[in-house]
Image (cartoon, rainbow, N blue to C red; front, side, top):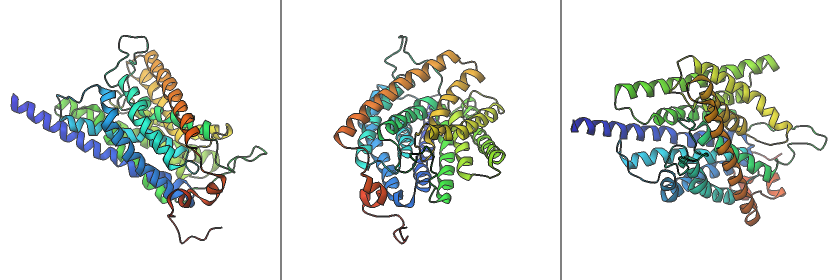
Length: 391
C-alpha cells in the first residue's frame, strides 16, 4: 500500500507540473494576442508588460501571496513545490486580463507596481475565501460557490480590476469623437492574434484539467479527461456561434470576433467543466460567444475603451460561467450569485483604491505626445517594426 501511495504522489506531482507548463503557454498567448490587436507603435510595450507581469507576479506570489491564500505549503497528495507552481501559474493571468484592456496608454512601471500588489494581496485574498484557507468560514460572507478553475476567482477578478483601471485612465485618445462616434482602431497583426488565441486555448487544458487536482485513480483520470473535453467543446461552440452571428449581422467572418467568441466560451466553461455531460458545454459556450459579440459594442457605447475585448470575454463570461453552474448542475444558484457579488465588490473596490493611489504617486497614463508617437519608444526605447515608415 505504501508503494501505491508513492505512485499516486508521483503521478499527481507530474500531472500538476505538466498542467503548470500548459498554463505558462498562456503567457505568450496573452502577449501575442495583445501584440496583434494593438497598433504597431505599441507592440514592444505590450510585450514588455507581459514579461514584467510574469516575473513580478510570480515572485510576489512566491514570497507573500501563496501563504496568504492557502495558509500553509504542506500537501499530502503531491509535492508541495508542484502544488505551488500550479497555483503560481494562475496568478499572472489575472493581471494579463487587466493589462490587455488598458493597452496603448498605460505606463510599464505603475502597471508592474499594481501587479505586485494584486499578486501579493488582492488575488490571494480572493483565493483564500474560495479555494484556500478561508478566513471567512462560518460567516455570512463565506464563499460557498463552486468555481473549479476560476470563472469568478480569476477571470472576473481580473475583469473588475480592468474596469477600475479604465474608469481611472479613460479611453485612448481619438477612440471616441466629440460628436459621439466610435472610431475603429484596426489590429496591427492578425496572424499574431490567431497564434495568441490558440496558445491560450491550449493553455486552458492545463488551466481546467489541472484544477481537478488528481489523476492517480481511474475516477480522477476520467474526471480530468471529461473536464478537458468539455473545455474544448465550449471553445468550439463559442467560435462557431460568433462566426454565425457575425455573418448574419454583417455577411463577413471577423476572425478577431470568432477568436474572442472561442475565448468567451472557454471562460464560461471554466467554473464547472467537470460537472456537465458532453452536450451542456455546447450551450454554455454558444451563450458565452453571444455575450461577447454583443458586449463589445455595448462597452463602446458606454465609452469604455477596451482594445482587446477583455471585459467582454473575461468579466462578462466569468459571471455567466459561474451562474451556469447554478443552472446546469446541482449546485445552488443562490450561492453562485452570492460568490459573484462578494468577489465583485472586493476586487473592484480594492483594485480601484490601489490604482487611484498609484496614479497619484506615479501617473498610470503616458503623456499625450508619447501616446501619439507610440509607447514603444517612450517606454522601452525600441520599436518592434523599426523599418516601417511612420505615416
